[in-house]
Structure formats: structure tokens, C-alpha cells
Amino acid sequence: MKKLLLCVLIIAAVITFSSCKKEVDEPVSKTSENPTVQTTETEQSTSEDNSSMTVIINGEEFSVTLEDNETAKAFSDMLPVTLTMSELHGNEKYYYLDTSLPSNPQNIGTIHKGDIMLYGDNCVVIFYKDFETDYKYTRIGHIDNAELLEKQLGNGNIDVTVK
Image 1: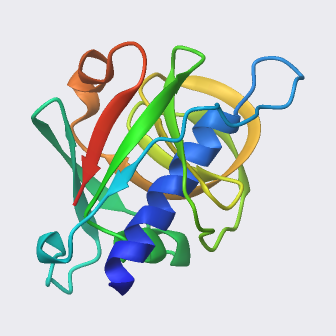
Image 2: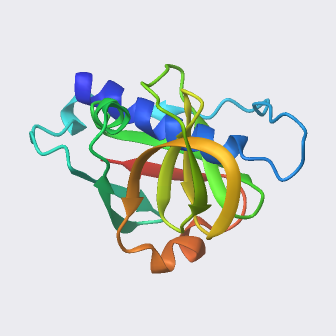
């Protein structure tokens, strides 16, 4: 149960970071839609290896290398989860978690395709394009095989399973 909560928290953090990244100086607000998080205890991993996880988008599996920090550990404790992630700025998908994750926001400078980050303490963000930013994020991990990420994430909202 702790791993599931940690994973959900980490995903939320990543979504928070990307969804809260603004190309204009207007505050980003949550959408009126309330995406669902679906988890089952039988899906929870019994593995003690918390250095990696898998993201599944449209049936395509992507391996993720997790950061060695409290945010990534808390997020991985939440796994497995399915998040309905929203589109933002044509370069990221985000999801607001119902709970907060530990955070230590840093000025990232350059976002890379495949970065998974936490914006604030509850917005999980997956980035699918490279760009420069002045926003602060807490790193959760990086999708190792991100070449097809943009194609799989596509336009609009999408369900992403993390295990």
C-alpha cells in the first residue's frame, strides 16, 4: 500500500511540474475534469527494487529510471496506478494527485523528452519534448526509451499506467 501511495504521489508530482509550467504569466489552474486514478492491491509490485518502473501508453511499454530521492520513492510506493493525464502547451502531460509528495524543487533549466517531474507537491508531469524553462521541479525519473514518446502521448488527454 505504501508503494502504491508513493507511486501515485510521484506521478502527481511529475504532472504538477509539467502542467504548471506556463508559457505565459498566468496561473495554471486545475481543469474542471477530475481524472481518475485506478489501482488494485493485486497489481502492486512486491519487488523491493525501487530504482525503476514502467509506464504504459497505448499499449507501448516505456522503462523509467527513477531518481534516488524521497519524491521518487514516495511515487513508486503508490504503484501501480492509471492516471488520466491532461495536455499542456504541446510538450507535456500532467496529472494532479489527491495527495502531496515530498518535494525539493530545483531550477531545472532544460527539460528533456522523457523527463518525469513533480511540480509543486502534487502535480506529476511527463514531458515529451525538449525545451528551456525557468520553472522549478522535483525530479522523479526519466523514460529511458523516449524516442516514440511524443507519438504515443499524442494530442489531448490520455490514460497512462505506471507500474
